[in-house]
Amino acid sequence: MNLLLVSYYAPPTVTPRAARLAELARALLERGHQVQILTSTNEGKDTVHLEKILGAEVLSVPLGPLGRAQRKSSPSTPGTGDSHSWKRHAKQFAHGLLFPEWQSEWVFQARSVQVAPPDRVISLVAPFSGAILGDRLARRWGVPHIMDYGDPWSHSVDRGLGWRQPLDRQVERRLLGRARAVVVNAQGHARRLREVFPSVRETACFWNGYDPADFSGPLPAIEPAFRHVGQLYSARLPLQPLFQVLPEFPELFPLHQIGPAFGQKPAALNVHPPVSFAEAVISMRSAQALLLLGSPGDVQLPSKLFHYAASGRPFLIIADGKASAYTELPLDERAVICTNEPSDLRRGLASLREQLDRTFAPLNDFDARGIMHRYAEAIEGWK
Image (cartoon, rainbow, N blue to C red; front, side, top):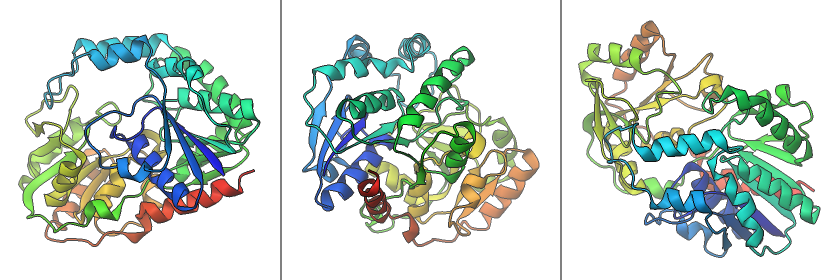
């Protein structure tokens, strides 16, 4: 079959969506399919996922005015946690004016790209404009459209701008009603979609997983550091309770943040500059313990969860609500789950402290290659 993957991000850009696209493309290619990748942002120097899409035809959508302005703008000073740069405010302003987000111009720019008629269209979102583009292309050729969610859309607390939620929900309902299948990475998200949008035809859950090759090198020496690797989004879960309790556990104090920490400069946080993916893996594998912030509503699983599970190090998950997104996973003692309440944080940190001297074997259930081959098999069956 000829399969079209629609994703705003693609390798060598390093984002969770680009990584998932690379793993899925590799599985589809290994199963003998032709793969086209329609993307808008596929630049960068980190080639960690690039070889996985060799053999696929990459179709680049030309940047529009907003995309060109974004690429030319200077980034904030790495690792400073500066949330007041003009670049960040400009992006938020454009996000507020455009629907469904500032990247939506690529839906119109894609008209100039020649795409061979596919047998299936798979859109990997967010940004959610990818679902609009995927739906449009699938209807053009009369083929099944499969929507693959990374983040929730109209019921996400991260999107803000409550005035726009009715429009978000209306468009999402329309796209879901036409989609052949909806793929998520957490069972809680599938349940939520079926509750809010009864017209959803079929849902399936396939985790992001991890590539064992990324974690196959010799184990680095363990350093006495409690780390969070990747951008620190305090808007998802308030961090004040953690920073209040953490000094009571000197073995875990302070928290070392590897990457941006927008607006966070407490004494309990030591911010380090961003690193490449390979360096991030070393930071995970050499940490005494790791921190994962859950997403509100327990409807999605952060990609770094699977990297943490492969690192061999114990980690603390601060989850929202009943933490069902995590308790349903085949995790063992390496993962300590707690809520954001101070008393439960103390319990969680105390349990984490007991695991500091342990090194765990990778969890085979999270091997991305096997997961993506099962996903590819499902795509073959959705007609």
